[in-house]
Length: 89
Image (cartoon, rainbow, N blue to C red; front, side, top):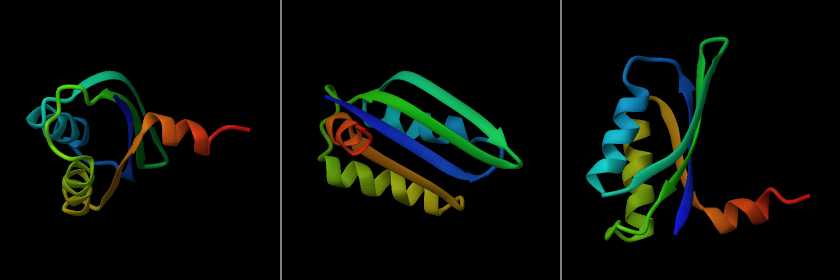
Protein backbone atom coordinates (compact mmCIF):
# COMPACT_ATOMS: atom_id res chain seq x y z
CA UNK A 1 0.00 0.00 0.00
CA UNK A 2 1.17 3.53 -0.76
CA UNK A 3 0.66 6.63 1.35
CA UNK A 4 1.31 10.36 1.15
CA UNK A 5 3.35 12.10 3.86
CA UNK A 6 3.14 15.90 4.09
CA UNK A 7 5.37 18.13 6.20
CA UNK A 8 4.88 21.87 6.76
CA UNK A 9 6.60 24.26 9.15
CA UNK A 10 9.36 26.78 9.74
CA UNK A 11 12.55 25.75 7.97
CA UNK A 12 15.19 24.17 10.20
CA UNK A 13 18.15 21.83 9.91
CA UNK A 14 17.38 18.10 9.77
CA UNK A 15 13.71 17.99 8.72
CA UNK A 16 14.21 15.63 5.79
CA UNK A 17 16.68 13.46 7.72
CA UNK A 18 14.36 13.22 10.73
CA UNK A 19 11.28 12.28 8.72
CA UNK A 20 13.22 9.78 6.60
CA UNK A 21 14.82 8.18 9.68
CA UNK A 22 11.39 7.88 11.32
CA UNK A 23 10.06 6.16 8.20
CA UNK A 24 13.13 3.91 7.87
CA UNK A 25 12.70 2.79 11.49
CA UNK A 26 9.30 1.42 10.40
CA UNK A 27 10.71 -0.27 7.25
CA UNK A 28 8.95 2.26 5.00
CA UNK A 29 10.50 3.04 1.62
CA UNK A 30 10.36 6.55 0.12
CA UNK A 31 9.27 6.29 -3.53
CA UNK A 32 9.12 9.98 -4.44
CA UNK A 33 9.84 13.22 -2.65
CA UNK A 34 9.30 16.89 -3.42
CA UNK A 35 10.28 19.73 -1.10
CA UNK A 36 10.62 23.47 -1.23
CA UNK A 37 11.18 26.43 1.05
CA UNK A 38 8.90 29.43 0.59
CA UNK A 39 9.58 32.59 2.61
CA UNK A 40 11.19 30.60 5.42
CA UNK A 41 8.54 27.85 5.49
CA UNK A 42 9.48 24.29 4.60
CA UNK A 43 6.98 22.15 2.67
CA UNK A 44 7.47 18.54 1.63
CA UNK A 45 5.35 15.83 0.05
CA UNK A 46 6.46 12.21 -0.10
CA UNK A 47 4.99 9.09 -1.66
CA UNK A 48 5.92 6.10 0.49
CA UNK A 49 5.50 2.33 0.29
CA UNK A 50 3.98 0.78 3.43
CA UNK A 51 4.01 -2.83 2.24
CA UNK A 52 6.89 -3.87 4.56
CA UNK A 53 5.67 -1.84 7.56
CA UNK A 54 4.27 -3.93 10.43
CA UNK A 55 3.10 -0.96 12.53
CA UNK A 56 -0.67 -0.29 12.44
CA UNK A 57 -1.50 2.82 10.39
CA UNK A 58 -2.98 4.75 13.33
CA UNK A 59 0.18 4.20 15.43
CA UNK A 60 2.37 5.19 12.50
CA UNK A 61 0.35 8.37 12.05
CA UNK A 62 0.69 9.18 15.75
CA UNK A 63 4.46 8.56 15.64
CA UNK A 64 4.94 10.93 12.69
CA UNK A 65 2.70 13.53 14.29
CA UNK A 66 4.66 13.34 17.55
CA UNK A 67 7.93 13.74 15.64
CA UNK A 68 6.55 16.89 14.04
CA UNK A 69 5.11 18.36 17.23
CA UNK A 70 8.49 18.08 18.90
CA UNK A 71 9.93 20.31 16.19
CA UNK A 72 7.05 22.70 15.54
CA UNK A 73 6.07 20.93 12.30
CA UNK A 74 2.86 19.49 10.94
CA UNK A 75 3.59 15.93 9.75
CA UNK A 76 0.65 13.99 8.36
CA UNK A 77 0.21 10.70 6.54
CA UNK A 78 -2.77 9.61 4.43
CA UNK A 79 -3.41 6.45 2.49
CA UNK A 80 -2.96 7.10 -1.22
CA UNK A 81 -6.53 6.15 -2.12
CA UNK A 82 -7.98 8.56 0.45
CA UNK A 83 -5.59 11.33 -0.62
CA UNK A 84 -6.58 10.80 -4.27
CA UNK A 85 -10.31 10.82 -3.45
CA UNK A 86 -9.97 14.07 -1.49
CA UNK A 87 -8.14 15.80 -4.36
CA UNK A 88 -10.26 14.74 -7.33
CA UNK A 89 -12.06 17.45 -9.23
